[in-house]
Image 1: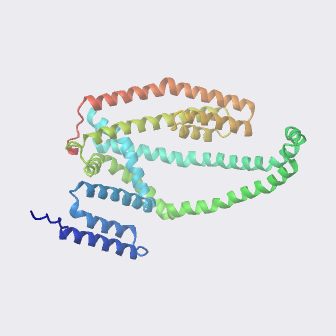
Image 2: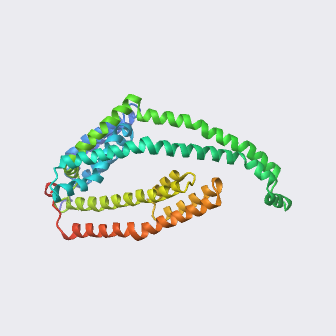
Image 3: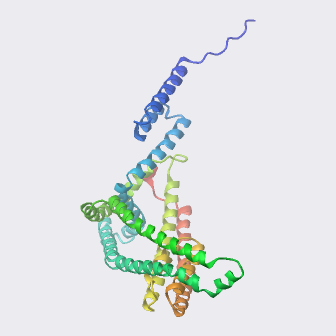
Length: 369
């Protein structure tokens, strides 16, 4: 019997491999002149005929995600207001939807009310809150610098360090000399970086005209985005892959995630208020900074409350009195009690109700199929 002839590689495979190698060589040759945009276009054009194949789909999805992240990083200054508006609309959409379904309030009316409320809150924060927080932060920075500048004198006069020096554990003269040269240099370096930071911040935000334009544009964007949020949501969801022929899993995941974020932000904001208001009434220094820190650190589970205690006690020991330390400890304890006994249980019950409605009642997302 004649021996079987070896299978020949199809000519189209050879041509395809040669074309890919030629393209890679061309891209490597022009790597300094080509940007990521043209590389992405070349990759998409190469894989588009094979888009129905799973490996090609995976590469297209991965490349699209990487290129999308690159575009977001390059256009972050321009896209920041749009992203912020979409996030706010995402958080406020359940209130507008509930008003429309339960009380038959037109969507544009509830959207207008919420937009005006958001603008009013932001205006109050910018006009009243930001200057007060900035003033306290400036005072804290000056106090910290003054305290740091006193470190060499404290080292020179400390009885504990004198005993350590007598035991041969350290040389106070050398330590004082090092602190005298090290601390001013670090302070000057930090102060020298402030103008560069502010300059970069203003360059990123834009000129004054651009800032005013953005401030005037954001309420309009928020109104139309919130009013038409369901259509925008359905359009974004339609770009994502299906599972078993439908996309209801996206609606469930978005609802669970949104409920968690809304609840966590609400608890954190209330925790900040519960700390800042009593401390301000008791005349504790840096009360607004401590309230702001308490709200932000509350977003960190478990560890956030510990860090709040450490920060509050440290600030009061350094710049306050012993009675201020006791007041801070009492206020933080009451805040933790209210959060654990009232806020968190209400949030957990609400979350369980949301989960029950999601997984035992079929959601109505007909446009997402």
